[in-house]
Length: 357
Image (cartoon, rainbow, N blue to C red):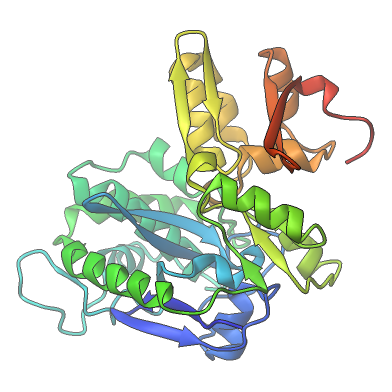
């Protein structure tokens, strides 16, 4: 099995023999011994396990807070990872004035300390990471954090000690502390080198992650028994709660064609691997009145990982997007690899379902 590789604290990490159904939280706590990331519900509900992933996006980076407990470890292959233990130790995160880190706390951590925003402390690492993602996506771009924005971005984190007020106070103070920033130029170089190293490695036949739609259709036809996954916000629960095991996994989230959103005058086409947060943003752009629905759907880490295609394909009665999509007249495009090449057909969404799941 090919090694799992990612960037952490500015250095490439390579882990061999990671099973395809092993979660990121298991790798962090059990394999690497980094227990700062906590195990709470094991369902992606409480946020104690929140970590942040960084991915190249053109000349910059995107940062997403996700739940490590239901994230399959191999899904972070080739990306950058931060946990609550990394913010003051990552050499690529430094004060913007160039003085260099001298053991100080990151502004996210310092703001939480200043506002006494930790009680029992179990949930604190998750709050730190959700705030770190908010810091990178907003504060580092010169945008202050409003209380409403803080509430939305912390929607996936629970505090059992009811300490939300000081946590929200800390979120609003982050931009008032000396600015820290990720050296994205150096990090992008490291991610590019990592990608080149991965290209030279043998394919991973236990965790298959195709890059094109044609490749996905071919692989799916050749490995019909492989477990399809996207954001794993439901399959992850099969692993953590039902203790199901998968010898082979087929991940669709790197398929270029399935990660696109195409806007046309009369419709919006959303790829099956588009994350819920991005898919809902596209729907809201066309119909602003859907904003409340978009922010009430799960918590942000779940929306950052889960996909609209997965929510549709899962066929679960708790798939909240289906009544909305059916009311909007949505249809699905189904594809498979046929004897003469790829074949597709379009089907009204309400006709896709024949029963439970």
